[in-house]
Length: 266
Figure 1 (cartoon, rainbow, N blue to C red):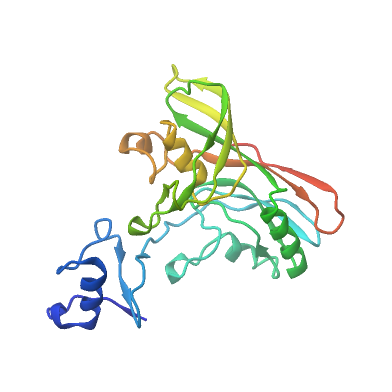
Figure 2 (cartoon, rainbow, N blue to C red):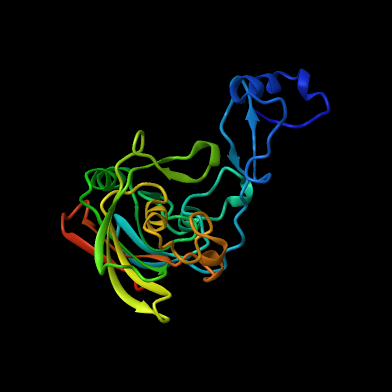
């Protein structure tokens, strides 16, 4: 696999012929103002994220651990898993394996999202927890602050989510090919003269960016969100105001129901 580069003879290059055939254009296109680039090899590949995460100086807090599982508090601004770019090595997983060598991820939180995560300390435990997520027996709640004042004190959002491939890494609402995505919400507080609303989200599914895109779809994007809000709502918070506060699941060995809690920091 090779990086696609402009060399002054792009019209004669095999890479360019692929671009012309697939996209019907005779000029290379910048993706999202140069943020993404094309990779080429035997076949055409989708845009690749060249994002480099800023240094995260906050520490991971270990909330609970035994010989089978870890419950941790992930800080905002830290990847869950190290990226392919070697500059994105720092992550929840990278840090924790220094102390817990067998730790593996069972699920992820977005880069900007903080809060509770569970990690497995063996392959059988990982498989058991993964099955619980797949069977939707894991219950998660998130606290967030949204722009504006919601009309209802509670409700649910049922809008299918799909990858927006031309605009990677964005997701989109797609009733034709999207996967089912359902989010329940409850208003906790209306603050600052109804210019923002604190809510508790309970997602019934776990699609990528689900809470962020669902919030936008009801007209109240999450403050601090760089992907699904406006410049104004992004600028109203120094971070994404989304925090995983509880995680409920069955202990993979004892079978006891675990209720992990991690108070919201904002």
